[in-house]
Amino acid sequence: MVNIIVDKQYEGTRLDKLLSLLLNDLSRSQIVHLIDDGKCFVNQHVCKASYRVKEGDKIDISLEKKANDLHLQSEKIELDIVYEDDDIAIINKPQGMVVHPGNGNKEHTLANALLYHFNSLSTINGEFRPGIVHRIDKDTSGLICIAKNDRAHRCLAEQLAQHTMKREYIALVKGAFKENKGHIDLPIGRDKNNRLKMAVDAKNGKRAVTDFEVINRYNDYTLIRCRLETGRTHQIRVHLAYIGHPVDSDPLYNKKNATRLHPNGQLLSAVKLTLIHPSSHKEMTFTIDLPQYFQEIISRLD
Image 1 (cartoon, helix red, strand yellow):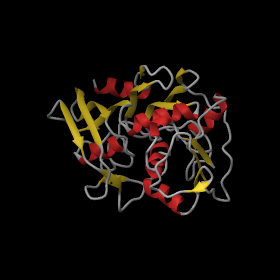
Image 2 (cartoon, helix red, strand yellow):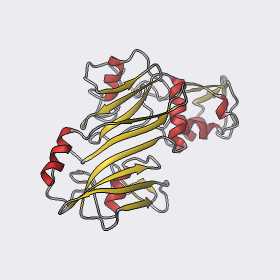
Image 3 (cartoon, helix red, strand yellow):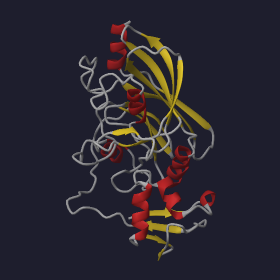
Image 4 (cartoon, one colour):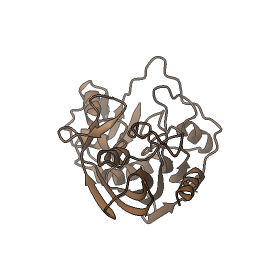
């Protein structure tokens, strides 16, 4: 069961829209199905998706669990905690770590580690996603923001929805860019031929915008900085592959590349994160260096 108390800032928002903002692991259609199936209650009453919420409304959503689901267990896993206070924590996630449990991944995730390291985490995204506001892919390294209470979670989720949380990545891609900067505005949806992949989909995809600039050029590679205006699943990887410059060593979107510089996944790292703090309302920016393996590959290219 997920419980939400409506903040004043959301007054007048449609119920389905509000839930899609706050429960970012569920699609809009999944949320509508939950409401239509009578699994969403507002002040203990079943409501329609079109209901306009009021400040102080108590929303209860019943998320069914499969019989074989287990309770999420805390695990003593070392974390690189870049910053922490009473509201948020900024984690430098290593390549190879899954953010939260899913099919085939019940243990050794960031969520398991968070339960061990922090006494308080937001509950908005349910038991298996404690504190998780946004995700980065398993084989993408870098910064991820964790909410330590529901109020902070709602604030951060709103920033993601309004595209005011700024995220920057460094990527090593195949081929040489002629331009020094670029703007990619192409909608992304689920790949119709492979459910594990996303794809550019002009008909059914959601708007996705990536800006990039060249940092350095090598013989067959280009090092670029990418800034996300939206946060679709696999967005950078899909966009760059579509324009003919896939991220090097990407096992999903760069299969044609026989020569991989790195054996453990895409050379992509989230190196900068800017947000508005939920309590102080001040802008905060966090930056990290590229992981050692990434730096060594660039040194070899140099």
